[in-house]
Image (cartoon, rainbow, N blue to C red):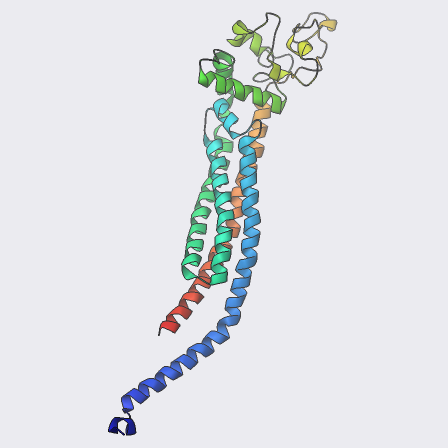
Length: 314
């Protein structure tokens, strides 16, 4: 038998003992911390399910605001500003990203993959920034445009509405936006009530549309009409009141037309924009609060997994 087997090297024996003690200590520490990791993993699983629902809700709200009859794309030509539309797109992007990340988070949690967990946490932080920007734009939009909208409404209705819509795409887009707004908000013209020259009477007195309308008896477009007798609404049928007669000198010429929207759109539009800006802003403000929680949990779990990997390498 060789001598080195009878008398093993003391240095090699000490290194082996130190390695055994280190492995035992690492295993004991990892066993003690398994409860913490299990708690983090379970919390992140529940969080991912919840954030999936939140992301789908934000995505659904954004799409609805975009495709509804008088949605974000129809608001832009009237107010002359794309902030509302951009904010809606940011909400859609943020909601879709959150829903997609919830799936990635589930995969990373199950596998305890530090790369996936790091990607998940980092991307959540980016989405958080996008949604905070959307929230800021939404509330900025509420206060920025109120003073400018009425002037823009007068300009577009006077110059663009219903004029050369077959050859001018901008006029066609503005006409479609006005029609959608008047149907949705049940209004007609710019501002005022039934006795105002700037409500339903605006079409007949101050627009290019009045010179190109299809019938000489027509006073207002179809979008100013409630469901029912369209001819009575637009003035084709004889009626002792609007729109055939305006501020008649006799009481019998002031009858109420049940099918004509007689209030202007300005006040209704301001209320509409306030409401939906508040909805977008609230969604974009609430979702980031949940994202902060997910970012913290994912990086904590990632740190635990990374620590175990380093101990195993040693």
